[in-house]
Length: 157
Image (cartoon, rainbow, N blue to C red; front, side, top):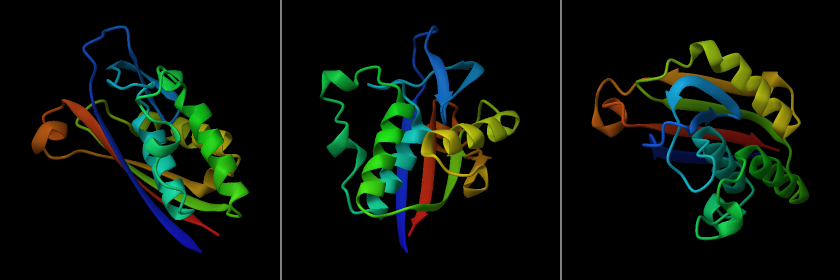
């Protein structure tokens, strides 16, 4: 059994047309996140946790933001590729536990869809995926509503 921890954060984009995508789910009524790819901070944190558990480096070593082929990339495709790498290294996912920290939007109405999306992308049962939303109680830039931060922990066998 191996544990991996992942983290990602992004500020909200100034582009009113950019959608907010978290765990592969488009969240209506909120600005998207500024990023080289689609800005899915949930998936980015999960990828880092997976690579950490399998000792395969980090998301930047596999999908660098200096490489134009990842510009605007669909993070769901990156996660599917990361899962292939983890499985190729001889590991299977036991579970993932995700904490999304933001003042807005409220995530509770989207949590089940996020869990189902991640389970589908990762090829696992939804019971292996936990997603929780928390606020930062108005502390720092995340607490001021300027962005989103995500922590992810995975267990692989």
